[in-house]
Image 1 (cartoon, rainbow, N blue to C red):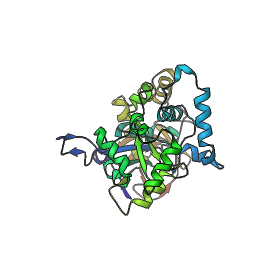
Image 2: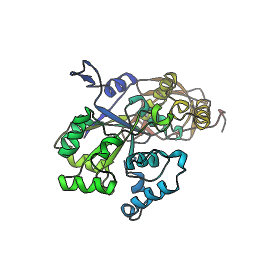
Image 3: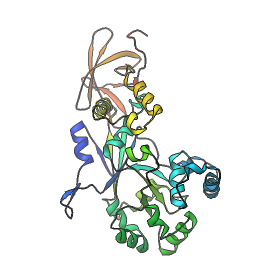
Length: 328
């Protein structure tokens, strides 16, 4: 799997929009979808898998009872796929993973957690055009009929009306696969996040394992862009200036308060080996800090979230600091 570690905001944007020229349309139309994570160590497991135990056996019970007890006013219609999307949207453990069409939305989720600013982040990018090579012929035919790269509930209903039927048909046609499913516009949050979901052809399969098993057949299938921890502050500030914030991603009072809480927090302070320091400058993934005694130092995060002093190369331990005062 191709792994790219960027060293500046400009390089990051170039990498995210790389190879997005679409010859048939004569326009920039990226074939990638994106998923941002604030910590490079996070495993891309589904919420159903993280439930633990024999999670595959409870999948249908979870969905069946969600549909039974959900308020009628929230009904997304009769399609099982719309109910699956709504369940994921409201936090029910499912086999779906959240993705976005927007690279900037992915960057928001890679930089939203201030308490993880000392850790490298990652943006996963999957090429959905290359992904079609691994789809059963019947699923590819449906995409061709709709002239689409993504499945909708109505498209999937023509293939299977339940998850168990979907799993069975894919297994009958050949090997396992992953599809990308665009949910209906259930609310503003889904619209503003340019959201879509990945769906495996078995509840026990995990996307990252599937990608690693197929990357040799097609190296263009997936890549990940690693964001050094020392670049996160700059990315976060520039996203705020572009209005990519919690207030937009999560419309309503909860999103508003989350944005205000983060925006007004004293996040220009960090601890370096237990010493309080104030961020003075940022450039090309380097952070210049000033200590309470007036001394100046430049820091950078190396691969694996290992922080170093630029001048001496000495490893240091860095943590975000929430205190508003210079004094401990």
